[in-house]
Image (tube, rainbow, N blue to C red; front, side, top):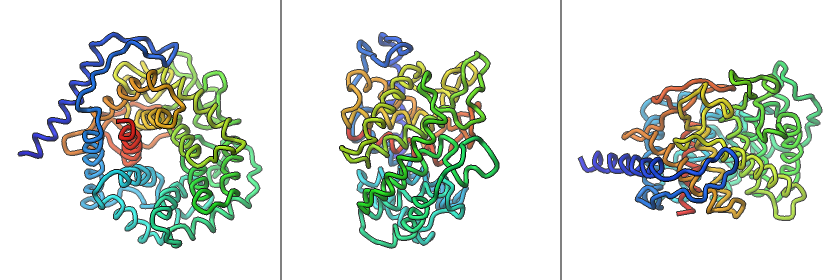
Length: 386
């Protein structure tokens, strides 16, 4: 009974905060991320204790689901690997050992190997968590297999066009999702081993993908070459929410590993600020982002995987002095309300778009582990703010 009361308490906190936001004066976000004048109540949703509690509730649901129902996807799969990034972030602030224990158990079971399609970005997304665990435990077995693979990636020429073609994903970072999966793993390895070749390769391939897929007018990424000229019903270009979330999530993780004097750092910061300004300007009234960023009316329900990434990267920007706190914290808080109000009493995070490569409609009771990862990453940065 006490547990049920506590769960209901957090849901009421989220509801109360949402009501405060919707009944206070709003400054339009369409032209600028500046939201000076919007009043947000500092209630019990916005503090370290409440943030950690709901993070643990979501993570515990995920662990319980794995333990009782098994893994829906292969343990090395990008879906789970994204979840692991959030679990690792949570393990750094929670006193519970279950999160790091689970990650180590998975690594040992996989012999610290990545997926079988060795040069495909998705299949070595898991390596970024391996490297972070290595940084904690200094156990060489955690990075030895990936370091061998990374040496091969550095040596590979990567000369192909990024035009969509059969098996191009096994050879090039030809889709925007790859920017969360691959360069981050190389960048973390570079930091851990003090070998700049991994980071330099990550930067080189990052800019190859960016040059091909980034729309310099809209400040958003097309998912891949098939979408560059596609438009939505309203005539605006197709820009997929989670796809741009992948990019920004990867971008801040690159910045976490780029030395202050690295020659590419200013370019990464400029890209980060351009994109976050754009993303902030198209946040919806409920605090979320729709699956089609520029045509929200065609997909009118909130979606939590993209929203989770945007909350994460803007909170990160506040914590790292790259975004103005006065302007962006209200946006982050509003996004956090949208996310926490999608958590069921049992801890399941809902309103998640299923595996896709483009905007789709979603159901409120839809969940996936990659959204859990984004949620936990967002919470970990909010925890630092509060």
